[in-house]
Amino acid sequence: MEISYSFHISSRSHAVTTTGKLASVSKHNTRAYESSDYDRRQIDIIRGTGSVVNDVKEVYSREFDEALRVYNERQKRPERRIEDYLEHVSKSQNDVAVECIIQLGGSDFWEKIPKEDRQAMTHIFKDQIRALEELLPSFKIANAVIHYDEASPHMHVVGVPVAEGYTRGLERQCAKTKVFTQESLERCQDVLRERASRGMEMNPKLFKGVEMKAKEEGRNHDVPKFMLKALKEKEEALLKAQEGVRVAEFKKKHLESSLSALTGQIESEKEELSALKEEREREVEAGKRVRASWERLEANMLDKDAFIEKYVEGHLPKEKVQNDGLYHFGGAEVVKASLRKEAEKAWEKSIRTEREELTQEVNRHRGRGR
Image 1 (cartoon, one colour):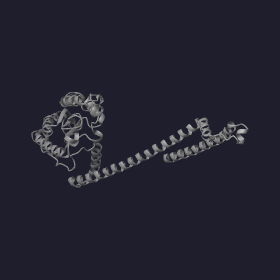
Image 2 (cartoon, one colour):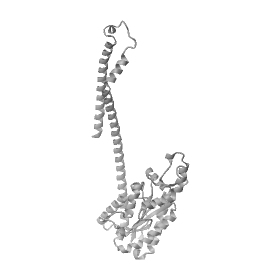
Image 3 (tube, helix red, strand yellow):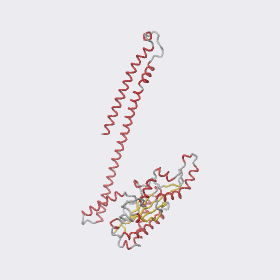
Image 4 (cartoon, one colour):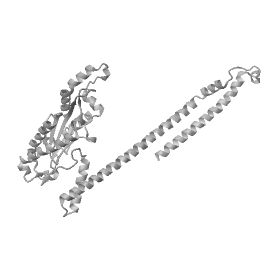
């Protein structure tokens, strides 16, 4: 019999980018809530405490306090100083910590193993911690918890990736991409798999006649759980319907097909999301134009008297012509009265124009919404 091994790190939607997400990780990992699905008596905290948040804060203090002090002393402007580096990283949307999940064997293997025998996995998981620290000494592990209360025993490891030598900001910083590179992930996969395999050999009671599956290509990165679940469900359904097909060949073809279909679906959803985003941007711009037209119309309607006075002032002759008949029969007031009538007509024309523009903008905006 063969069983799988998996090691992946938090990324994309599962990335620990804020202190809020770190708190959620802490609640899940340490079972800091009541749920019928979990049993906090069946978890084993082998590194850290019952609070992942506090454990990460302790690592931040130990690793960054001195660099933070030096950085703040160099700042002449108080607003550039950083009071709390953890909160600073959280607000920047960079990962404040990295969570690694390590699992050996799936539910199809563990459902046959009595729960009381699963605790023998602890020594393998502890060795995985030691190996991980040897491979990535710059990954400072804050907390590690083994979950024995789910379908398959697995371990959650939360730590802080630390890199130094920066010339901007702190000289020493939290830096996931510098610590977890493609090369370091591949090496972790290879070495940790080998260490887990040796651990299986040392535990014949659990793993007699059991071997580890060969490493699958392209599995040095995080695969979302929903994809794995969908693949497994499809695989099981097809296996039942296709009796007599060699399992190894069938699984390979099916996985390739399923991954291709899922990849196509994801790409299609990305394109749809992009189109929706562009449509939304167009609607926002149309809305801005409608508001601008409405504001111009309101301004003109409210400033009628000012419009008329400005018009009269602008069209009133600068020098009085004494021989002009208008000045003989009423003087400048007659001229102003005439200009006011012209101004009122000009104002009404301006309002009609603004209303027509506003109506056109509203109609165009409604047309996009249909």
